[in-house]
Length: 343
Ligand code: NAP
Ligand code: F7E
Image (cartoon, rainbow, N blue to C red; front, side, top):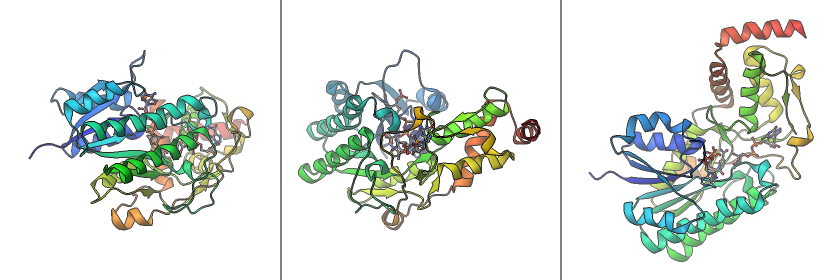
């Protein structure tokens, strides 16, 4: 049987790397679209490059998402079955400073890709990485029927890309679906998202590289899952019999403070002595206070459900960061004991 061909933008990111692994295991031919950077940024996909590139099952292409021809040429040449659009300026806090660029990559690039699919290869299915940030100030629980009230340029860009996807579906008959994913994390999460900042900084504190973690508002609440579980949801959305929009979430939410407590408890350290909060640099002009997703639709129609809970996730992330600094959990606990006595 002919192997399915998938395109992934954002393959070098957290979700792109896990999704590529999943699809390669399912025998897809994967084409990763990446941007040129002055320093090669392929750390998260180095293992699959080693395993699959020579066999021709994984191909990487330089593309500029502001350049329609660079996208269209690849669609025309390889005629993908599925197109996963994961590339984005994905940091909400930074989007307040780079609003125009955020809209260009997160919204206009999505429009460009879908228009190119429509013109060149209409039977290609399209996935748009939509986000719970679109709900913004709408109170939880949020599901597919909840109104959007974005609170940041990032949220606005994702609402516009969401509607772009619906437009290509409804007006032009594309198989174009939105996955409305709530926060999801992993050992591959970028270092400046709050969960990874906490696990990574704790590893740095225990290894003597840092003294304190400086955070912003720790009272906000998020519904956190594991990226490994969520990429399965992403794939299932495009395997559904028709294009639709789905919320993917755990249904539980916790404050940032709860997450800090969980992580520090793993090594037995009192977090209050090591965390500074309400630092101006990390406060946002408008906050999304509470997100908790109702993913009943995905659980019922896609038979999707997460395996990881927040304790598993926190442990997975912390163990990885301890390892980066050459520490086992036992070793980390011993250092924590010493630090507790010192202060
Ligand atoms: P991520 O780790 O930040 O990865 C983003 C990817 O987009 C990276 O591969 C990045 O490339 C690429 N990218 C950024 N700007 C680009 C540009 N100008 N041109 C080309 N590529 C560009 O994000 P993630 O957590 O994997 O999230 C994947 C997608 O899901 C994003 O669209 C995000 O907005 C959305 N989403 C994420 C979450 C979440 O909680 N993680 C929740 C809902 C929706 P570089 O590696 O070169 O920077
Ligand atoms: O912030 C607060 C911050 O940056 C979570 C992206 O993947 O999920 C992510 O967006 C909360 C916010 O994620 C710090 O103010 C406190 O209330 O980890 P975050 P996010 O903004 O929820 C959505 C669903 C996406 O789609 C996005 O792409 O934590 N917070 N102190 C802090 N946040 C950061 N980053 N750094 C702090 O020091």
